[in-house]
Length: 258
Image 1: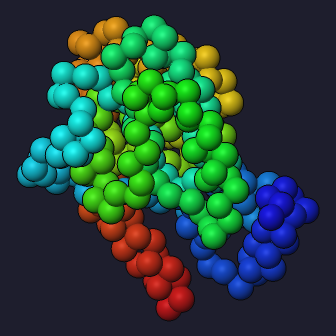
Image 2: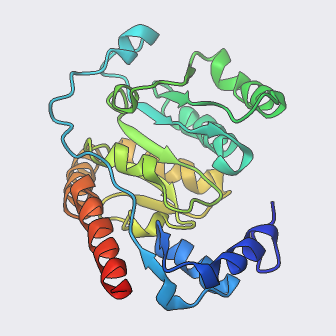
């Protein structure tokens, strides 16, 4: 599906615009896309996605134990729907570099295939054969409880080519896990480079590997970024904040109809 100004998505958005009071955009990046499609700015309202920040009560994850990974072994992970734009091949390529520099490091890749077409999933499985042969990469499959997956990690990685927002980052950051992510799409609206995570260009596995290795080598910096990330989610991306923003928008729209 084309997402350019003359693509299928843009044409349908323009058809909807005269009948729509407000388009809710999950990021400023999406708002700018709609503007490029021709939607008037006053129709676009940015309300970021959110997550629950009440995660302190979660029990420690036993995922490491299930996979035979000791608790003093550094684990780097990512998860999501297995699609080419999610950048998981770059994650594996970066993992190969990091493993050369830090042979004890393990990598967890979660998620599952996008559709019944298994061709990409098969290629991703084959792409990880080098790390798997060294017992360094685990395909965890889909883990329904995202906290169970996240709590097993020391660093979370989002290697996507582009993300409209990047909700999975909030899930990691809410748990105090430092993140390395590509500076694409709406991601920079969540992660401030050097403050609550590290940002790298998309489709550059060497830059991804260097950022991961930097955090591995600087445990105090990991802790600082993780705590800063936790505070940022609580202050800006808590679920109650999102619900209040929706309620305020609906009140404004209803008042305008009177």
